[in-house]
Amino acid sequence: MSSMSIQRSAWGVDSRVIVYAAIGAALYGVVALFSFVIPGSNNVSVRPAFAIVPFFGYAFGPVVGLFTGLVGNAIVDQLSGYGLLTAWNWHIANGLVGLIAGVLAAGSMARMGGKIVGPAIVAAISIVIGMLFVFSDIFVFGNDFNTALTGSYLWVLVPDLIAGVILVPLLVMAWEPLKESLGR
Amino acid sequence: MISTPRYLGRGSWLGSRDPRVPLVVGVLAAATVIQLWDIRIVSVLFVLGQAYYRTASIPFRLVRRQWAFAVLFVSILVLVNTILTGGAIGDFDRSDLHPLFYLPLLGTPISAESLSYGATQLLRFLTFITIGFPIAYAIAPSDLGPALARLRIPEKFAFGVDLTYRFIPSLAGDLQETIDAQRVRGYEWDKGRGGPIARVRRTVPLIVPLTMNAIVGAEDTIDAMDLRGFGTGRRSWLRELAYDRADRALLLTALAIFFAVTIASLMGLTKLWVFPPLLTLAGE
Image 1: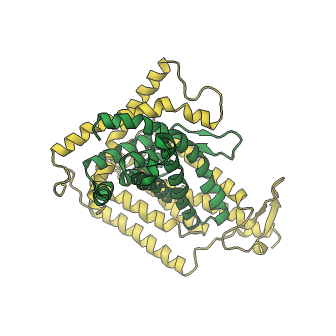
Image 2 (image 1 turned 90 degrees about the vertical axis):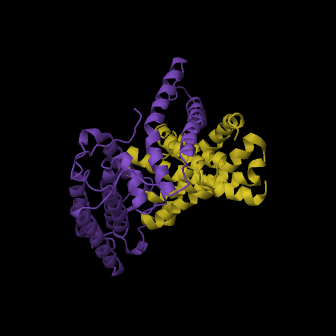
Image 3 (image 1 turned 135 degrees about the vertical axis):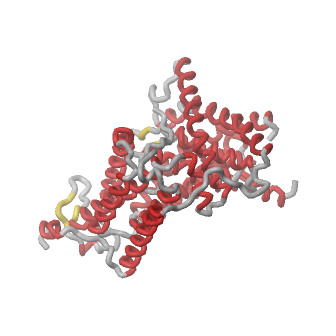
């Protein structure tokens, strides 16, 4: 398969992409109820379901990852009562995480470090880069840089890294044999 | 225990509107409120937002938990932000602030400006949430897809959103089944000792099987869509949407408020308003 066709398939939107994207977003919305506060932290809560975002990007491509993060986070906020549009920029940040995971997985990054370290690296990099978008809190909520850094970015980075680095490799390990049996 | 979207505004005035209306009003309200730092104007919008919310007739007892979470969350957020900023407020120079007292141990100055800023921020968030609730509860989930498509959102994205809402109840059911099945084996995700890593690992018996089952189940949906020729032509929607006079009036009102606030913002009339009694208290 040529690199041209790989690129086209990574960004194409067909029934498969739409269904996996919808499944990813719905899963994220449903499983997000499992969260807990890190003891001794400043109300920093870990949401294990967040790992679904980079995993869907990694397994099904950047479009699926983008949709899973963007729509999934909107649903989580909607179901929790925080409001669909209150922190719309955070939906985009989540979407970017899935998008970047998909882009990295389509490249050589995913082949580094095998089936455990590779996905963990992809998840970590996508979270670190994608979540940079929460600095838009400076424009949306009028926060200053320090607040955006400590109150938004680091606040979400640490728990998301914990969830992503642990769960994404496990999800990939469960998905790989399934993928082959489904003929993907 | 597991939340799924609920259509609580059925039959209400807002619930009878074209589903595009709450979506457009929500977007316009968000674009309006982020321009405002004068609590007097935010208060007016909050009151208007409450009146708008009332038209959705959402029973409070059914959303009490969501309101409690939202109010608690934004209160903590505003409080933590005030502490984290060390008393700094937007464009204000520290020498221009009017300190009222200093937080014990941290030494963070709490000024007339920071209290006004915190109160405005809190009301801004509550206005966002007030307008957002009808989007969550006064639009029939099956109307979201056609509404987004008619708003000229790419139809595949609109269909994806539609499909997402259709998957949520069945996935919530699957999650409950998985929880029950694991409980039978003596598993409780929130029981047991350990730090954050151990607790994340304890969610593996839930998240991994649920995700893999969902992916395998998705194959049937994909096959069904392919068999019906999905994506081979322009999609039509069963639900026909048309604005009536009330829809147009509501949209025009939201648009007028947005433009008025944008002009006021460009003229510098929406900046932070500091409560005069606090300035007096600070010895101004």
